[in-house]
Length: 324
Image (cartoon, rainbow, N blue to C red):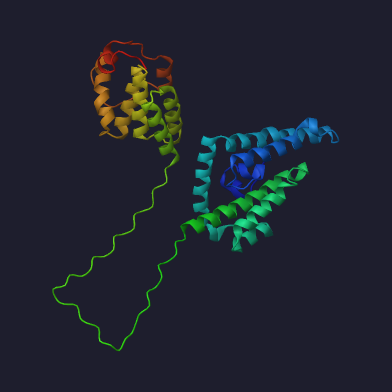
């Protein structure tokens, strides 16, 4: 069975896992797990003795295709962090498009106008959770309604975050007493220093790179490679990611793969210092002449045939003969 929902955040080709579980978008792991167990008990076929086989099958499909994937996404620290970051970006987008948004429920429309939107939002979510999966034929409509509330909440939260109060106006004081004039040789007071810019929020790819760099520093190269491979799926033209994963392959003594990614890095950024430093040494170790920055084989083929140069050659001279 196909579950198609076209309201709320689902309109943006986004799976609203919070709406599926009916938890607030700022719910913590403990709250998410508690809600998941409630739904799982309700939908499990063994707990639906009084219902028809058709309803049991429908409940099992909701559990396996919607509820379980939503819990897996929101229960993991890394996946939940990335998901919340995406929600934050969606909230900012919704704020820019607020004039063109179409809402279908009275509760969502009320949430747009209410000054105490946080309280109304969480109260509504808690009330909807009580009966969300009672009538399986209405589940998708209820999820759509919850997602519409999530949409408005994200938009209002983004508006609250971006709205900075203006500085208070300084009243003008009029006096009949003449004010002393400033001596001609007196320097004016320096203007106050500008406020520092708010810290830039890391992108998802930057988070991958930061974790990978930390793992590389700890010689945990296999885990670092996974982080960088995920980053390259999002930004295949990120020269920094190519250089770092090349370094990982280099430390694992997979020289051909290292060469490929260093070449990719130089193709994207000819001044990449790490690639400029290491690629000629890899060429020499492989017994090749330095070539133009052109990829001649695929990453998948290189993974199947890792370099087996052992402790001699490049690693013997540069990493003390130890294969990491």
